[in-house]
Image (tube, rainbow, N blue to C red; front, side):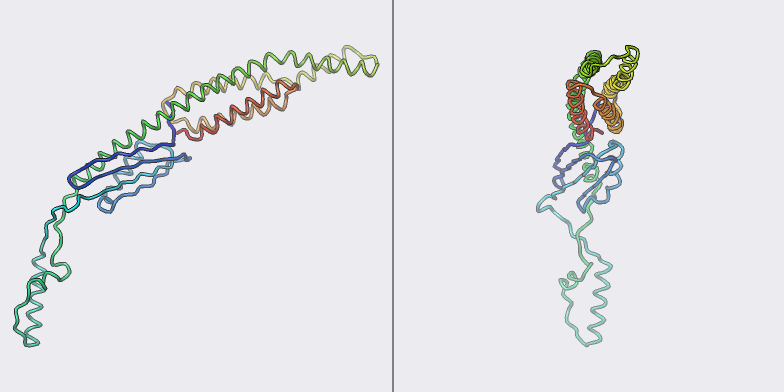
Length: 288
């Protein structure tokens, strides 16, 4: 099954700590290029996030963004650094003795000293687990989106294969007619000149013309490439690079067919073939 490299997914979850929201978006790229943006509270899980993305994605410019909105007015516990408070108190008493003061030291002044009081540390383990679980769900949805886009592309490529097969068949049908027109054209010029001709030499010249205009090899290769493309569309592994290479082969044969064209209809068919190949090439750029 083909998978597109262009997709977007967003998943949200509400936890006791706040609201989590993952967004994963991507565009086409030759390799896997990850950009991860995390909130400050959850920056420590970046290795696990990167590991998940690397394990399930192979190509594309991926941007994964986590948004975290903490619970408003959450109950937070204060924690007093008792050891530091005693040190500050002892230091204040020593200074009072030096300067000869004996007033009591206000407790609030001790609490204002940097580091004496702070918020109790919160166990972020459950929040981190919830974040990684939500990421798994987001990647699942993201891959499903890529799969749906890939199915549409596969349908388009299959339709273009049918159109190319019709063109190849039509060019094969036109070949005898094109050679006959070349023969008649050559005989007509000889008659216009009013000179005698050697039938053996004439037939030899016609053979040279037929060899120069022979496109059987190109048509055979186009048929083989079409068959290969149909086989690739049935595969489950990433095939983007293989398809890109195949488009180059298609284009090479179409150019040769156009250069050997000896009649207007074959030339028009060659142009139609190039248009189909270009349409496929543009879509193939987005395939993983």
